[in-house]
Image (tube, rainbow, N blue to C red; front, side, top):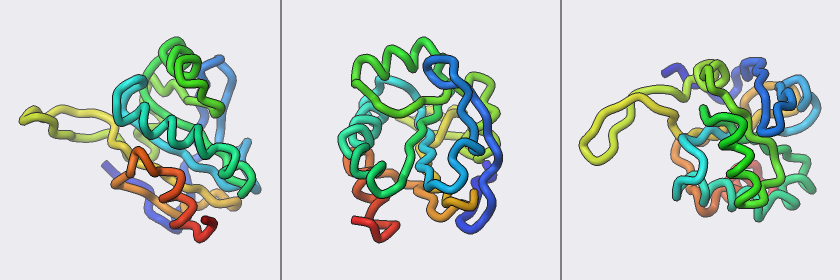
Length: 155
């Protein structure tokens, strides 16, 4: 797992969202972007994180911050997740894990004594110039937006 460090350029990613629309880093030039990686749609931690970002979405937008989620779930699964929780931001369906691997968030995980490979819950805040200004390796799923704003001194 080779995560991107703060100060480094973010990899130029491209994928499709829950509607099949293209989403790429180029679309966010000149804006701050919260690019959050999560393991799976509609699981407790991932739902808490997505709903916290949803509940604070207007505040984030008002501060010039866009939000995009990424997991290896399909467009159809993302669409169900978006519909169920009324999520206002795009979710990239990274089924081939190209974005996940580019950001170094795929790797060994341990859960209840089992070891397996999966997506680590990591958030990158990418600045207007395309460089990583903050990386969160330990995400507070129920207070993630607040944690982002605090780290950027925007709360």
